[in-house]
Image 1: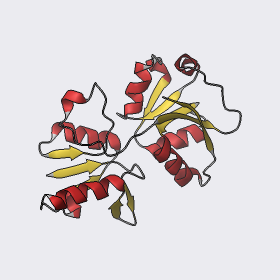
Image 2: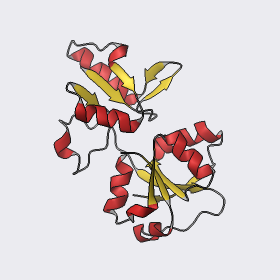
Image 3: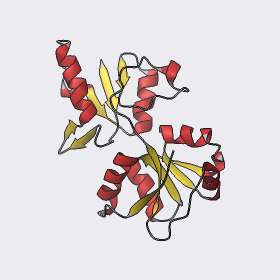
Length: 180
């Protein structure tokens, strides 16, 4: 069995070459209870799109942790929940736009991580697909927002704050404008 995930703190992340996080601890604990300990080489942290694709195409592969959406329901056998998550819209803190409803999002370009649930959730809210841009990783997404290649970005709140601090060095570089 192989387990794949992404760098998505605090659920799963790599620190000093070691895979850590809440979902990693839960996975190891469950497998230990089943008397099936997992070796470190069977857990891999990949860019999200690659982890997701690997789980879809490779037998005996589990992707963790992922958002459970109706569109994804038939694609996997589910276990959990491990945690709850809130996808939010981030903006540069200087002069952030006012977002009162999903319709307001259509006035801006929005970045997401490729194959992340945020993309599906934005489409479900009727955000115009031509306004949504996919990036391979959270750091590339955050860099695009810093460089003003996109107006806004959508990601999980806790992981977004962590990754923003990691990329910019400033935990207040971006503000949350809207929760999906």
